[in-house]
Length: 231
Image: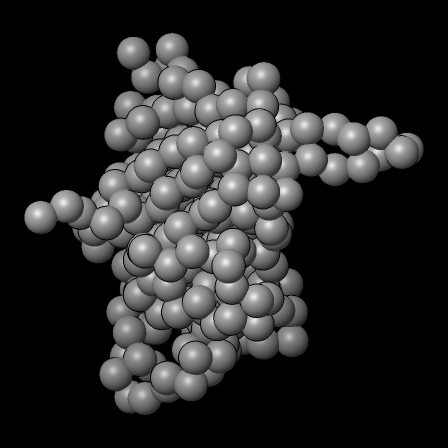
């Protein structure tokens, strides 16, 4: 019995236009990620790490090729259906946190559940339990502007996990944090994801995570190449 990949990418092509010039980001890119794997993407700024995460999430579409998540071909779905799929199956941790400033910490965490019309007493209990694991129990009623950068990122991590998605995408999750805070946040994220058996794809400049990853790739020459950093 074959296992369906968590993410399968076939012959992916992606480019953009700048000053009437076409710039290729990915060319005939192929990748298969098994359920529960932790993948790290390395690469300089502008190399395409964030673009790849946006493509895998369905927020962006390739020029050609296929992106299949949990057996669903996202490239064949219209935008609305991709959004619905993402809300149910994908958690996204943004570098800039993307918390809604007019909502409390609790309300920010409940929002993904409201979007999939799934809020009950069990889910509210889960919010409290998750915040407790992240040492944020006393921040339930706080607004984002009252939180430190590390606290905001921990809330963003909790929000990405609250709806129990199969796939977590993290885009430079410690890029706005100091070294010590960033290290603690990475340890929390990786620990929570591994304990839950989720698939994690992380774009990062931080090399502290390399030892925890199943595979490390560098984006070079429009391809994902195994990085020497995980040898």
